[in-house]
Length: 602
Ligand code: M6R
Image (cartoon, rainbow, N blue to C red):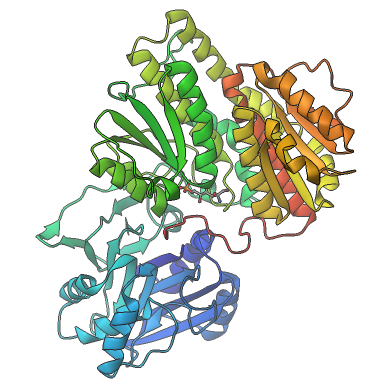
């Protein structure tokens, strides 16, 4: 949901801003712009479309200056055109603002500012910020930002430059991510780490309600009480991890990285002789009920975890879409635990659901992939996934590492509550250890999937079916296909087909079937026979020996292992299938239409 960057230092601002925007383009990509302090004047360039178009225009303009801000947009208010692109400039061209978030009271503010003579040029909610800043031009940057943010309702990360502070970049945050990168003779701002790591790995997280004043020499953070001192975090990623490494898309790079991502997430959590789990997760007492809240792919990982929790812990567990959870009238209390699952750790629906649960007294745990993210900081306990940066909008390695981290969380409860015998613990440790290698074996069969993709790419609709945990995995498979190939896909609990959707099955309709849960395979096979009887084309993914497979049109065989871990392996052919279908359909795989990676609006 929009990416913002800012630079002040001894170097040129534009190269940093452009490189940063390119790395944040996953957050939004319908228009972009930069504003740079050039000889005491603000110069700006804004274009509709991708960063590449902005780069092209900038190449002909030779904008120079050592202080500037930039923005890549995911439109909320106002069409994605040049006029609505950020940064927005005030009436006199001496203040520029880039904004990520939504200003909820923009209409009232706009009326008020227009009555005071301000001329608006865009349809955006964001433009009110720059006009408000003009109203406070008699105050220093910190005071002006504090006065402006006191008037705003909604969510924002702001990056500001104004001619009266020619060496400074100002910033403010409320519920939208904002980081400071500390460099040598330069300081920077960005919505996410990949934009900073070409220049520094020392990062400071800006908290809600804070304003920032950056110069080349110093980064000052203020809250209402005064200046705040905060120790920087050291980012473990390197630049290579945030780049495509010669591959055509981030998505295929990230799919192939999964064995490594699983190993990283597992590191140090298994004893060397594989007899013990060394989880170092103190989940607290076993709750009355365990809730998993999340959106999209993270929700699908939560569905897998819910089953595992029910099976291993024998307590009630639920997985709920964060956007729905918030509007249920739930009687949560101190005996409940809510696990917020989010790759970015910034998804507003999930963050708000977590905050609500916390306010009601529930214990809250985060499972996130981004250090310093809001969910990771606000949760009482954070169980990290160590997948490394995930840049493609379609989530892949985040999903499989989430399942792994959630498995660790459930096992930590099991261990702490005496529900795991030594033999069971050892069996888990051995299976977990073998998982990354099995993932490698699955990925070696990439070409097999490429061939099936040709069949699916011609379809009108694709159905994904499974029972139990396989149904959860089917949901993830269909989301992946829809999201990047724009093909209609639908996931169904296999037993539900006969209650309606079977009417859509006719000759040649493709059905992807998940058959990894031993106790449910026979039942699912019966449902597949019903599909075959109506001419459907069945592509099955299984980790079991299927005695009765002659009915199936194509069978993809996964390495055998514990059914509980099969979702990790089953996700891989599903991700590859979606990728190759999208490749054949020539869609924009890393940046599918209408979507953005980090969804910080409700
Ligand atoms: O960062 P989060 O895990 O909280 O994001 C949640 C969803 O927006 C995300 O998983 C989305 O569904 C992906 N694009 C799916 O590939």
